[in-house]
Amino acid sequence: MTAQLMDWMTVAWGILQGNHRFMVWNTFLAVVPLALSFWLFHKPRSQWLRWGVFLILGATFLPTAHRVFRTGIFLLQRLSTNYLIWILILTLILMSSEIWHLRRTQNSPTVSRSLLWWLGFVAFIAFLPNAPYVLTDVIHLINDIRAGHSAWIITLALIPQYLIFMMVGFQSYVLSLIYLTWYMERCGLRRFTRVAELVIHGLTAVGIYLGRFQRFNSWDIVTDPDILVRSVMNDLIGRLPVLVMIVTFVVIMVLYWLFKQLTLALMHRNSTPKGVWSPVAPVESPARDSETQG
Image (cartoon, rainbow, N blue to C red; front, side, top):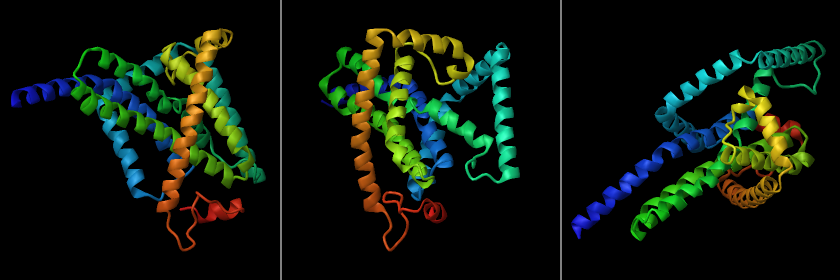
């Protein structure tokens, strides 16, 4: 019995190690938008959440550092061979600088974010589909089950590993959107939050399809925009790709609503009473929200 147990543990550890590579990389990509949301939209009061997110980000970055650097070098090489992209980037920088200059000179209340913030927001939108993308990695679980492993290994090793992996990824998506909607409410755009959520769900469904079936990455928006656009246009006229994206959209929308309600309930339960401001139940005045947020 002891020998059989040790054999099961050895096999289980080997399977977990085999899944380690893609799970670490996909978890890193999934947590990036959540970390960006802390800077762009909302700084959580919970120290556990902040330290936990950056701990996960660091722990998943270290094993994939060589891949990140290799991707960075690839991006630089692609950009250096595509002068049109550089022209576009330069144009955007000049336009943003002009907007920033008008803000400084005219003190316009409608423009309140710097060029760096907008670049961070673009990166947030580009990386956001990577968070719910982890749900599609269930295909690896199916392959592991088909490999003929024992029911004990599947139940006690594989399923918990995949559940934790998918929970971290999708919860990053949920928290990121919650913080975005809170930010919109503070800016007086509360009536547009539902529309923004649906639009982002739609863009995420398209991004998941392009990532899972067409094997595009978030950075292809910069390195291969022409190929990416052509692929999207071709897929939008195909029945099967559109059906896949619609099903993905519905799944994301339903799961997001469920996870959002649970998350808001937990936040409300753990929120500090005695008049301390809580974004779970925002007050009517956006100005007061901005002043009281910590």
